[in-house]
Image 1 (cartoon, rainbow, N blue to C red):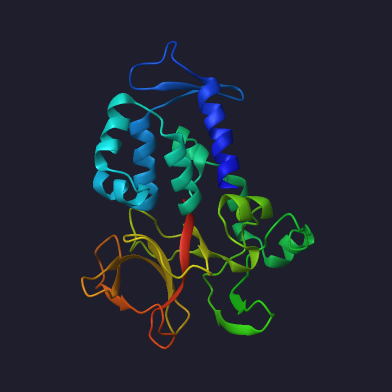
Image 2 (cartoon, one colour):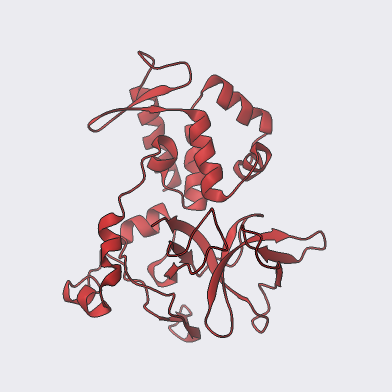
Length: 271
């Protein structure tokens, strides 16, 4: 799938990027309905913003390139399509948004936040094989044989969005049974996320890159998202972006030590 997407984007890059009338800081990309100007510096900046990275050195580390290459891309305004496709695929980022800055319109979907699950079911969304209806308030994890591994309840588990199965599997790399949609409570992760924002969580992934974001759960069902860092001794600690709470040690392999790791945050939806 990665090679297919990469070829499509490379083809798009080679066939439609034009030099005419574009400033030295942008390239013109032809898309349905017109043209958009792509600024490499802005595109890389959006990757940093989405991943919560602060420096180009961190970006270079995540993209597995030398920092000098990052600087060259910016100075020459070279759109590194292969590298951008790779990072979007591995981190679940929206490729169109990273390249153009155009965010998907979630307004219509978010209007369903006030609907009860029965209303969603009345539209047959839960029975639509082309849509994935996330679990509501209760999550049950099964093994490959259908045996229950664990379960938990939380009012932060919502089903206000029903993403397309194809997009979920092929764009984000998440199997439908591993998806939960979590509502963030509080502003501990401001400015990366705020109260009421939604995040997609892949429960099959319990780890992330250094500085990546995991969803955590406490014994009372409270769920939080925290940025995770590796300590010099190899242990992990989770901290909030707003620096309003004490960092906490987490042990991914210890199912008796709270907070427990629910999964990796793969996409955030800003309200």
